[in-house]
Length: 243
Image: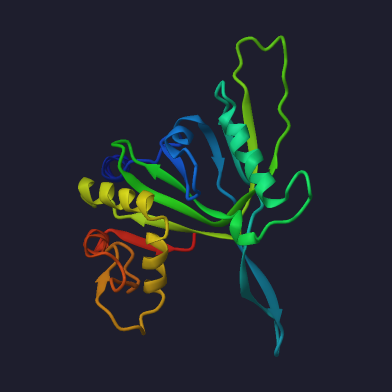
């Protein structure tokens, strides 16, 4: 590749930076505005295929059997003086298993979806990863040290989840369109689920709108059951895929 081509590609698309992101918890009582400031790091887990060997005649073949996800969905937070960040997750643990009676709560009562949203240099939403059926499985050890006078207290949380998928926003999407999508994501955490479910059910009747042009896979979103304004914003802007 010539240097001119490389510079032109960088000028057109740029590179995503590691520090322009935030997490959103679809859980009642979660202070997402505060988490946007105190969450210091998020580890996006790995994703792979579980393969099976098929041997019919001659050399065997490896075929895909299912998707498998890594275990390392981890977050690190700065703790405020009210220790809200630690208290939020320890209370969440207590809701799963009562610390006094050891009674186990219903699964649906302590899970929620979590979205990690990534932005370009202009602060526009460009990519998001949505995790399903999340809950904390551990709050890691915190060390208190009299000698650490210049350090802030942090808490690291290991999250359990069932699966995740990625959401790509078209590079040429207008700023007002991406802002509207993000607002819809915050106000209705299930909005993207409705769209993705519709895109996987093309046999259902309803009005369809095209997904982002740069994917070119022919997938479509069904606007039935989605607010008209949301459907218009999503048209030609959002693409769904499983990573």
